[in-house]
Length: 190
Image 1 (tube, helix red, strand yellow):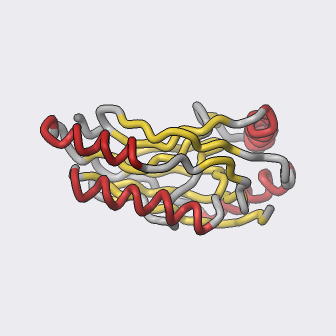
Image 2 (cartoon, helix red, strand yellow):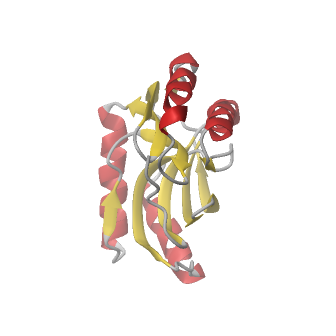
């Protein structure tokens, strides 16, 4: 396994937030994985599904003006109450664990609308590559002996199932080699 985290980085993020009970379930699995493999565990406050990101860079420093403009762009898109994601499988690769999601067209329609709004506000935006939630990021490589236990944890973790997000957050994230933090600036409750 190989860490992809070098130095301090961050960026702005538009994210779907899960009901607290769902986020805590995911965080429990994250904690179990961290006990087996050195990794960044995502707690309930950091669990999210990314819609889009922008200005992701090393030595990131959030700017209040940008956050305010970002929040206005997101509010212009409005709420979408028909978004549901089926988080069905726990998956691991060489640098992370995710709970994969299958989302209906309404999720991707919202992503496209939000993308258009934020681009209209003058930002170069990267859309999410899929509807998933990151659970852990590994801190190094060479944990070959721990892989069977990691796979057992992923196999034993029950699917999360279909989730209706409770909010859409305009936020920023910070990531160091040992920590991931999510900072909400504005929240649209669904």
